[in-house]
Image (cartoon, one colour):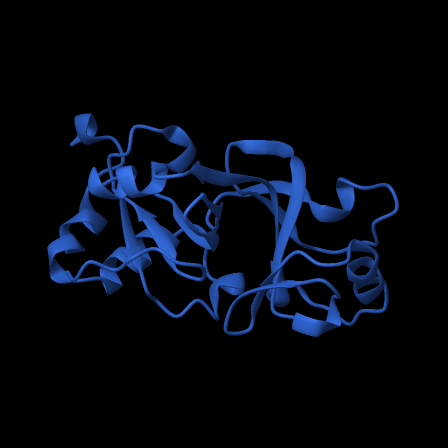
Length: 185
C-alpha cells in the first residue's frame, strides 16, 4: 500500500492488535492535522446515551452520542454535513464540518430541519502533540486511509472497522478475519 500522509479529512484505521483499549479496532476522522497537533474523533464507538439526555434544554433528538476519544471527555463535539446552516462551523472536507454555533444547532433540531444522518455527536476527542501521531504511524499502529468520508455520518458503527479494512489493499485483508482476542483462536 502506498504511504498516505495524514491530513484533515482523512481516516486513521487502528491495527487489529492495538493494546490501547481506547482505540481497539477503531476508525477515526482527522479534523485537524498540522505541525503542532492532530485532532480526531472515533467514529465507531457509540454509547447508549442520547444527545438530549446530556442537556436539560436540548430538544428531543434520536441521536446517540459517541466516544470521540480519551481526551477531555467532559466536552461535546459534533461533526455534521450542514455547512453554513450552523455558523462558525469548521470545514473538514467535502460536505463535512466540525462544531459550530450550539444555539443554532438546537434551533435546527427543534424546528425539525436536521435529521440523524446529518450529524454525529461525540464526548471527548483523540489528540496527539507534535510528532506523536507520526511516531505511531511509523510504529504501524495506524493506517491512513483516503476513503471518501461523505457517508461516514450514517455508516454502520458495528462493522465500520472491518468494512474499511476490506476496502484496503490485499496486504491488510487478513486483518478483517483476525479474532479480537487472538488467545481465543
